[in-house]
Length: 330
Image (cartoon, rainbow, N blue to C red; front, side):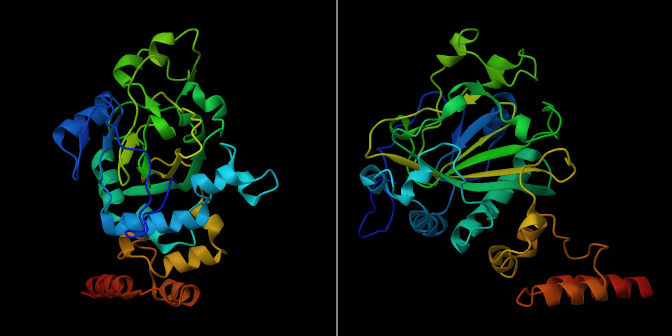
């Protein structure tokens, strides 16, 4: 994770170098140009999109989950840190023990971005994990240009707007070539490749491997890309470097063929209960929890959910249910 600034508590990383290749870089709300890049290139970067007051506590939380670059470099073969030396480690999954990480995953920034890029105000979170990358950690077959759709959808991607899924990298430290910035290839260069060809060999597509575009960006930036966008991992050898990021993905609510994690499966975990009881209706809705006013809510279901989650403030749900009931009587 690099080092921690003793005064700010913020994680430091490699000096940020803006790549010349990514299609669009903005700060804040998506612009028409960014939406154009999303639709035509299939990926873009929002620099420093995460507010500092959300980024800083998330950085502290991730420093408790993973060793720093220095700690990993000094760890012996019998160290507990060894489990993080492989790209396919069992990465921590949402909901996390950390309220800061959970809050960032379902923050207004992330939900607003998903709604805008997916073109709907009814979106669902379907993936959220946090990962670390260290020197000498091999990327395996992820070093090949590939798309992510085989384990993100039961079908194949459909390129038209309205059927997209939004994958993201949320950077918790600065990311550049020095610590494994991912390389992306614009959809404008790959649109003629058959959709089912999800991995490209170097021999057949050498010109795409020479594409210089990478997702270098400072901490707090969000990389957004679609599951039909070819990209590849890059490894690094400097033991003073590390990369830490959240992987967060959303889909339109109606795209039931898309998914990765199943939230009801976490229902027995204390992390789930802690998250639900501190969440807002909007945050719960993106997980599939019925929003206030939904036909699911009755006197009985409200009472049952109150019993299951005693610290969840059900005022919005009760108020909407009362309004619906009074409307029916009138």
